[in-house]
Image 1: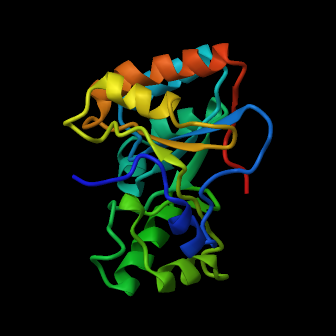
Image 2: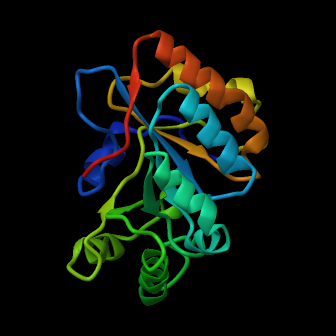
Image 3: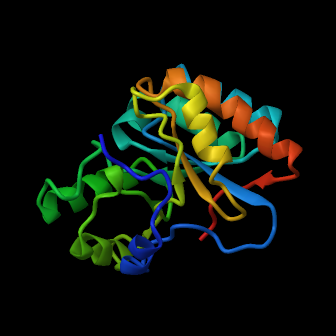
Length: 208
C-alpha cells in the first residue's frame, strides 16, 4: 500500500479548489476522523477527545450514520462537526460520475454538513466542480497529513510518530473511527492529544 504521510506541495497546487490545511500562525490543529460512526470505536474517540476538550470533524459514511444514528447524534451533541464521506465509501475514480454524485446526495440526506471528503482522496475534476455547484454546495476537505492508522503494517507507535513529527499549526490530520484502524488508533490518539496539549496547542473543527 503506497501513500504519503505528508501531502506534497505540488498536489495542493494542482487542486487549489480543495482545502488541504488551514493557514494560521496560532497553535491550532484540526483532527478529523473518517469512516464512522462505529459503536465501539467512535465512543472511544469521543471519550478521548472529551479529556482534552478537543472538538474534531467527523467525515461520516452515510450508511454507518443510518445504522448508528444515535452515535451520530452524540457526535454533534458533544460539539463535534459532522461531514459527508459518501454513503457507501465510493472511490470517485472507479465509478461513473452520476453514480458517485447520487451516492453523495444519499449521504447528504442523513448528514447535515457543507463539508465533504472523498474516500481515498480520489475524485475527478468534474466531480469536484459538481460538488461546488448549487445542487450540492459542498467544500472539499483533504488533509495535510495521514496518521496511517488504516495501514495494518504499521504499529500504533508509527502512527503516533507520523503525526507528532509532521504536524504544524493549521494541519488537518486524518484518523479513522473504524474497526480496521482501532488497534493503532487506541495507541496513537491519546498520545497525540497529550503531546500537543502539553505543547500548548488547541484543537478545532473545520469551519468553512
